[in-house]
Image 1 (cartoon, rainbow, N blue to C red):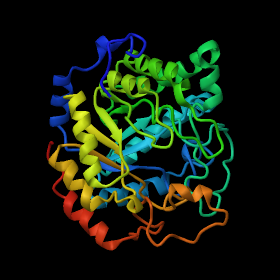
Image 2 (image 1 turned 135 degrees about the horizontal axis):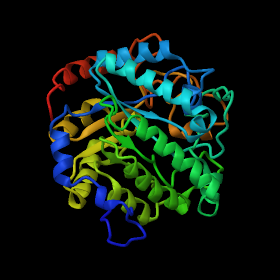
Image 3 (image 1 turned 180 degrees about the horizontal axis):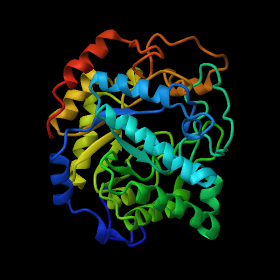
Length: 365
């Protein structure tokens, strides 16, 4: 993942990128970020979470309170460009409300601006009900494959996406409730089965979003998480561009702790910046809190697992549930998520471990 000096992969505003010294000083002044990728249990995806008709502040407040009770201090939360197009002022107001809810329980937010995972055709309005027994059956890409394919030759799309990035970041550029900006989740990502992979179609937007975000002059650092798809290896240029643009280096890993350490050591050969694992924890793949959190803490790596409360996203089911012909009952071992909708834990011993381990997480890394 070594970054090159090729201008085709380096953000044009790289001179505004934080130095490693600044990034490490910022990191060491704060508690190690530990938390979840969060969508409330009443939302199937980003659009249902944020649209005015389905925005559920009471559930968000209740569930973030539970997260704080487990000891978490950070939530990674997905946004969507269509929300800006639909109602920019209302969307910013709802963002402000969520940030306020989180701040009241000591949680800071990592907003995610774009995402190349799952359904490539996002649509505003009422969202579909979950397909029974299927992992993340309603999650949507943003801006979506069609927009990415048209993006290089369509100024209207470029201007719309640039306005979204600038408008959101400028609104919260000096806001201490925002920990950092994750500008693009899993670029080149894995679509829902049967859909066309994104691949290199993400590169023009990935480059531009770093530039737009820098131009908005946020006080918070930028990142985009390195990731690997063993079923369809990514073009190296994607990871190189992510690494070249990130102030804080983040990555995703769903596997046993011994593999995690190998990946971390490889990342360390490429950077001396702080490191955040912004997705992990899949019990069926030997990625668990009890094994991974001690390894993260020993290396001063932030840790953001996937999922808090089981709900409409159905991420208690594994990725491969997409290929099941019949809906499955609740799995004996949950893939992701920690709590049921009533706040009770899937695994009481796991919840006890989290509370005990994280009660000491209040000091700077």
